[in-house]
Image (cartoon, rainbow, N blue to C red):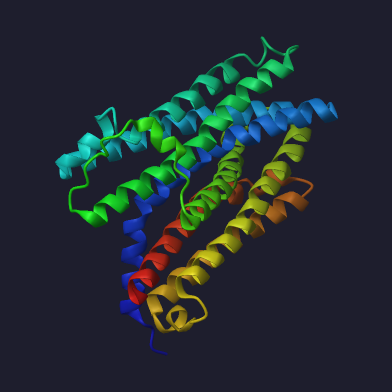
Length: 325
């Protein structure tokens, strides 16, 4: 049997090139999705009067600040690297008129809500409404970051098509808040929002496993919490897969020939789907298990598998787009 080594090599090369972006996407979107998850869990704890939901919300929130730190470090490092490579890009990060100012504001709002939300859990134990409000502010700030990131990308790439060195628009930065992206931008933002929930829940499974000895809440707690985070990861991942299929359909329409005639594209999408199905299988097993901690290795690996699936999906989508454009 002849194994197509060259298409496999090209697929591996493109996926490797996409891996840094996939890692940044995972950290960024997980940081944005985790506060939403924590707030909903805390509200559920209050509604159902079940303390395990509250404990899980606390752990998810502790993970959130770690993710935000990683998120800021990744984006700061990427900005410093690209500003050295492309000097004119620096103006987009420091110019008061730059759309990037919107990003700094929404990030500031998110942290302004999340930091006190995390460190006032015990102090506001009897003032749950106020505490949930702080978390909601942080969660909304993160979701708003997805919107402004979509607007910034749309503005930047539109200007880049008009010239090799896009200049910051000479208008007040806050006017960009009123921009509503087109259908493609809105779909992209929607996919990012779904991914943020899937990545946050996947990261939560790893966090619970790593903190098992440090935050030992007992066997009953982990029997409860691991299936919960697995369910949170499974449903958005399935929705994300459906949305990704919609993007592929948007790119190639009814002409599916490029999906199988271009071997690197077929391999990329096949590997991404396989990795996603492995993650889903792990979460389903953990959800149904009476001893979910026995599946800690699988739960710990799902973030890595999710990053690899995301990288190969982006590689395949980029290859598909270039092959038909």
